Amino acid sequence: MRNKYNYGELVKVNGIGKIYGKVKNKLGFILEKDSYYADYYIDLIFGKKDWFKEKSIERILGKKKNKVERYQIRLCTTVDGYELIKHNLQENEPISNNKLGQINIYKRFSKKGKDYIIVGWSSVFWPVSNKSIHIIENTIKTFKKLDIPFQYIVMNEENITDIEIYEFTDNDNNVEVFSIERKIKIKNLKQRPPFEW
Image (tube, rainbow, N blue to C red; front, side):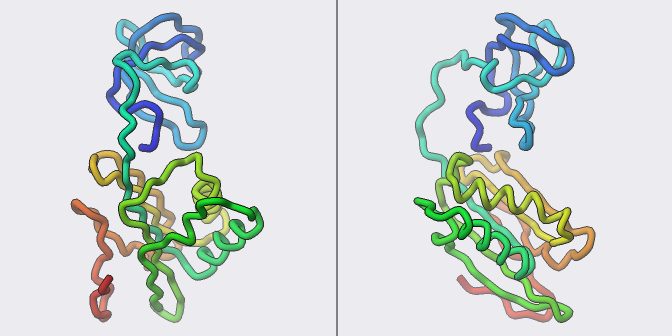
C-alpha cells in the first residue's frame, strides 16, 4: 500500500539482508513491507526469505505506472485523540496540502458518557511523503502508549487487497465502527439512527 513496490512483484535484489546477509543480483518476490522500518520482506528465487531496505531493490518489469491511486481513509478515535492530531499538525505549521482540512466525513457520537469522532476521506490521493499524513500516522502510532483507542483504515479503491488496518481497541471497543466491504462503511451503532452523508 502506497509502496514503491507491489506485493507479489518480481524484483532484483543487491544488498544486505537482515537475516542472511549479502545478496548480489538475485531475483525474488515482494511478500510484505514493514510499516515501521519500511523494509521489504522478499522471497528470493533459489534463496531464502529475508528483509531488505528499499534502496537494495530494483524493479525488473519496467517502471510502476504513474496511475494516481485513490484511497478511502477512515479514523475513529476519542475526542482527545482527534485533538492530539490537530495539535501536532498545528505545531508543525506551515503545512501545504494539509489533509485534515480536506475531510469528507466528520461525525461525533457519544457512548457510555464518552465522546468519539469519526473522520474520513473518500477517493483521495494519500502519499506517505505528505507532511500532514506523516504527522497524522505518527500521532496515531502513539495512541496505544497513551491509552487512546482508535481504528484507522487505509484502503486502495482500485485494489481491495491493498489495505492497512491499525487499531487499538483493548481498552475501548466503541471505536470499532467500520465494516469493510467494497467500500468502508460505518457499522450500525446500537440505538442510533444510521448516518447520512
